[in-house]
Image 1 (tube, rainbow, N blue to C red):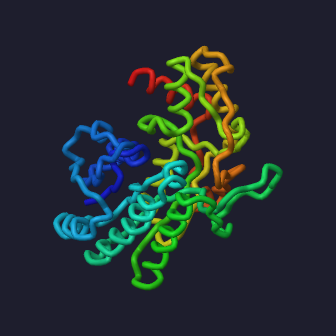
Image 2 (cartoon, helix red, strand yellow):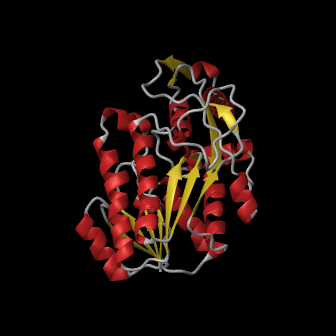
Image 3 (cartoon, helix red, strand yellow):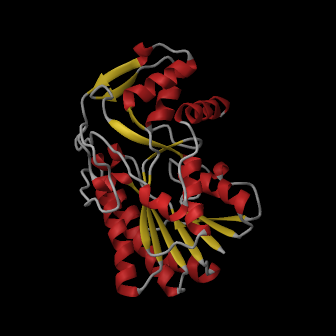
Length: 310
């Protein structure tokens, strides 16, 4: 039996749909159904059993783990919106740090076989636009906002629980995901919904920031390849090999929808704004053979189509 946290959220729910195709393993799905989650994203299949849970509640987490005794945990649950973390750091501290520690302790108590912690490239901080070296697994952590600081802390706790208590673990740090089920607060769905209403999307500093874009199904496939190949007690970057400026992504969406580029506006940069993310996933490729399959323009069109049918 597997346990997936954040299974009604963006990446977690896509991972459930991926699992449905590749395994018959029973899956316990935990989520507290906050604003960015949707129960309807979970596959309608007896393979998946939903259990409402707030991972910041230590007693409830312990109860669930003792009741179901999962063999492996895939931990997606997290507060993830940088703007929200700047306004109020506390939910990020409680969910991403305390919630992760609760899951780690509960996993230890039942001798879990693997705790796979899904994290972000934002723990590395920011590259300069002209940098030629990308983030690697050896890049020192340098978080620049409360969200990335909370994810960096959770990464450290996972490795510490391995070093101190022997917890079997895996950490993957992914670049910017996009695809179905993503909440409207994130760039791509925000631009889609604004464009459909002929409303302007205001972009920090004019959208010059560069992000590495990873289609969510490629991300899920990387996670599962690590599972299939029994990779343990290590850390891997999962990148899309697709660095694009936010403004260029926005223009591509407007072009798909047949909307004018005049629907792009400029707003002031936010505090702690990172200029550029770029990931090397060479270690992952060498270990598993994984490379991203989806072309960005193709997958972006598929993503837009999903939201149009929503």
